[in-house]
Image (cartoon, rainbow, N blue to C red; front, side, top):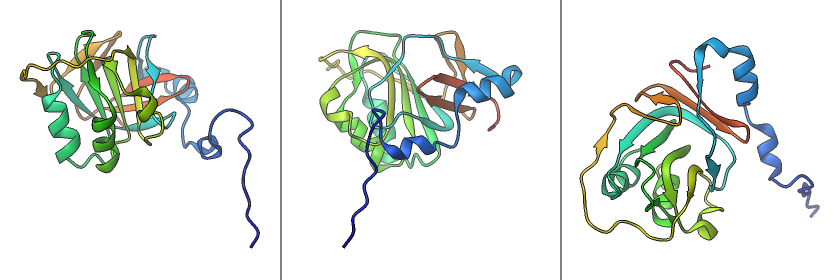
Length: 176
């Protein structure tokens, strides 16, 4: 049997060459309709792009409400935006990334930190965050789901749309 493999000459999987969008093109074509997230976010996930309708989570260091969302709610066509006010505690690691993948979330944008980066780099969910931290917050605290949050120069509204790729992260009121 003949086996055909596509070599990885450019540093990322061949399938990523066939994204259906590029944020730079959207910025050029729809500049009046978009917000661009400020700098400082890096992708730690297993795919380099995501898009979908925004679901927001406002946390106060502890990730209990995020766990319930990722574990219990179908995320098809959704991107989770988490605001933890850049507190230096990890709110996403291998366990939550697996929940996100199992429930079909396209990606997550975290205004905070992540951990388990060696394990999560192969999970097929985009995960943008401001950095890494090995510890998580242990004391349970309540958060809030689907409330507007703001960080890095943009205002995230549940139900709006987000597009992220290697060039950046953008938001729109309606899909483009």
